[in-house]
Length: 291
Image (cartoon, rainbow, N blue to C red; front, side, top):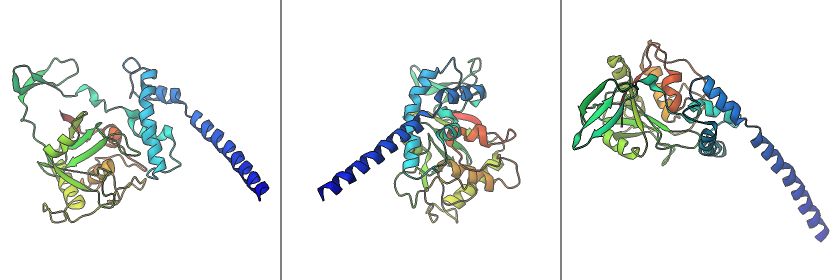
């Protein structure tokens, strides 16, 4: 009996000694330098603004999100880290074509701010802090939170004061959520929040209504009667299950009618890549506000 136990232990040690090196070799196969160079080539990363060493430090957090997605079975095991990090815009926020709005509170005037309308700060406009109004169809993207398998978070306005999203946490079998604008912003104000808007306001309103009737209430009431489970799925063209950026993609895909608003994709869509990668150039939303 004792001899059998020793043999069993030796067999287990032998198996572990094979598995561990294999796992280590798999980890070593990720060519971070090649990924970084590809991001530079695609114009996502400016090597003079973000060095390889600093980007590599960021990847510690990115890799953790990816690993959690694989471990929790929310990402397909065949999706490599190289593919996944590209889907997530290499972990970088959208570039916004040098039209990013940067707001500063004016000293001595807490109710006003300076908004820089261009990267060279040549066009400066003073507005009230409360002057920005959300419109149906507006897209919200933030870096203040992440879920297993997804860097960042996104949401869509289904009215002038309400936002729909799929937070990922909580009840995953009934995950679609509606919050007021102030509630949503207060939850994610520990990082940047960008708001994007279609120039075609009537089309955006049409999409916002579609999102409301297909992700919250079929009657358009404030009471929820649609319940959607949360899951990262490569099956993109289905209302349910869904996740934050898929909800937005599908709302625009199905809610925009015959307009060629989106590029037809397969697989996953991610928050940081949504604006640049998934909208056609004709309908690409513009940055209109930054919290």
